[in-house]
Amino acid sequence: MKKLTSLLSLFLTFALLIFYFKIPANIVNASLTNNYSAINPSPRKALSYLTLFVQSYILQIFTDLLDDSSTATSPNTMTLITNTSGNVTVRSNTTYTNISDNVTVKPNTTYINTTSIQIIPEANTKYVALTFDDGPNSSLTPKLLDALEKYNAKVTFFIVGNMVNNSKDVVKRAYDLGNEIGSHSYDHKDFTILSNTEIINQVNQTSAIIKSVTGTNPTLIRVPYGTHDDNVNSKLKSLGLPIILWNVDPIDWDCDDANLVYERVKDNLDDGNIVLMHDTHPTSIDAAVRILKDYSNNGYKFVTISELAALKKVQLIPGGTYFNF
Image (cartoon, rainbow, N blue to C red; front, side, top):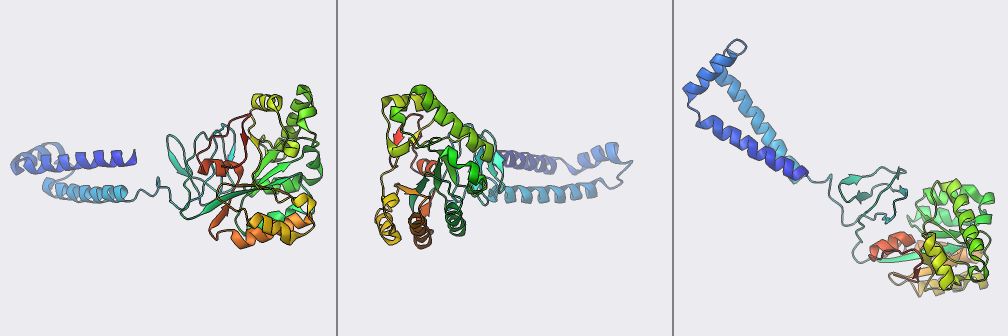
């Protein structure tokens, strides 16, 4: 729209100049004398000033046409995407493109009802989603958050509702750093053995407590133990929640060797993978911190589930199950 306006202004300016130079000087002088002699005794001089002004205006138009930085999206810019009408917490130095307009957003700002944001992947980069279940843990999760902040990485936390009350500050910090907060039920019960009412309560209780901390409802769920059936899928569909599973499991919850957990994750850092980990085990945190240190911005970027889905142009459907992208 800016270019169109500038082009139109340029056309009208040239038309004005052509019109001016085609008019005989005596007519110009007479016309100007009749209309402006009381305030400007030198019409031709006034037109000279007008010409200088027009030239300056033309120069500005060309500058605007060449400088389209206000709407350009850097090919190396990582951005957040959402297909929902909920709140979007944006990040600094990130260009977000809406359907109807382009805007460079401010850091630590929440934009409401952002409906469509385009994400542009970086060349020669593998994108992986690290995910952490069963937290938050008041003593272990902060160590992971320190590493995420240090290495400019993002992950998704699937948190258990009844774990939040003692770690609200941890959840808030995780959210404020740009990590994604998903639901992992209220008290980690197998959904396949629950009634529909119990499933709804598990989801709603967890959503309510997450919203009380972050201000937003979770838009993703990971069912406890990864167990689900057609009924669970149908109920979660009605609640508007896609089901996020995984395709990389280092079995960190049953391993007391951080080096082994590290190797299991390292060997499966393929583009589009979703890695299951737990921020409730010291060895898991140690392995994750080492992964972040060794691979962040070294041909890899660790992103949230929603970011990874956007990068791979996958629309997350409520009730759908996703193992990787």
